[in-house]
Amino acid sequence: MGQGRGWEGAVLKLLRARDFVLTVLDAQDVTPRYRRLRMSDGGLLAAAGVHPTMWVRLWFSADGRPHQRAYTLVDPDPATGTFALEFALHAGTASDWARSARPGDTVEATVQGTGFQHPDPAPSHLAVIGDPASLPAINSLLGALASAPATVWFEGEPAGLPRRTGAGRPEFRAVPRRDAGAHLVERVRAELPAVLADTPHPYVWIACDTTTTRTLATHVRKDLGLPKHRVQALGYWRAG
Image 1 (tube, one colour):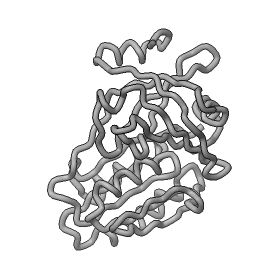
Image 2: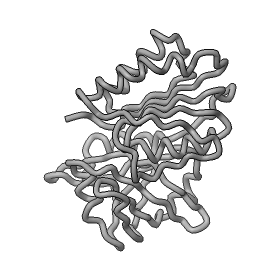
Image 3: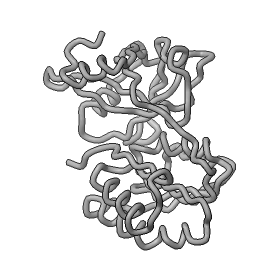
Image 4: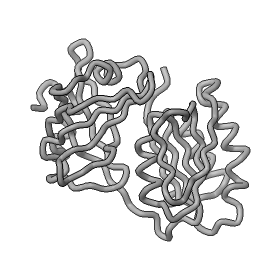
């Protein structure tokens, strides 16, 4: 395992990343563009434990070259050694694999770099900005911070997707994807200040395409003045 992964695989080995083989147990098309695979974990959960927003790197081959993408674990169950992975389908190697995956198929996974630290103090209001690619992580985050009221700006159409509102019943604001994410940036810039007004301990979590994520994180930190430890931002994909 782990052969032919190029420099990324070599670096992860130096960082003592752990490798596992996952096996597809069943597949479900949630919508025509969103697919859930239930997986046997190959010992991953017993070895690595579980935390909110936990993710793994999956390894694929594209034209003979290694290709890795990160995915959040959905409903991890250490007792049965299973979890689900959810794929927002588009053009790409990972989506192609997910579309054709059937029970018994396997994929290699690496655990390295994942972690979660509960905000301290706990959020008085949680602001989340994401899209279908980060929806599994959004669901996990809302579950972990369920005591806080939450507002979610969701780029794309959430209808039919597996949103989990949780005890706090977060407000979802659907935002169409336009102008390569510029419309989402405009909406958040216009609406976020009012949402965070008069809340003593805000926490902002951003996970969109890389460019949009960077733009919004800069806005929140520099223009709105939130300290770095109250903002978590991670680009989930690169716009073509």
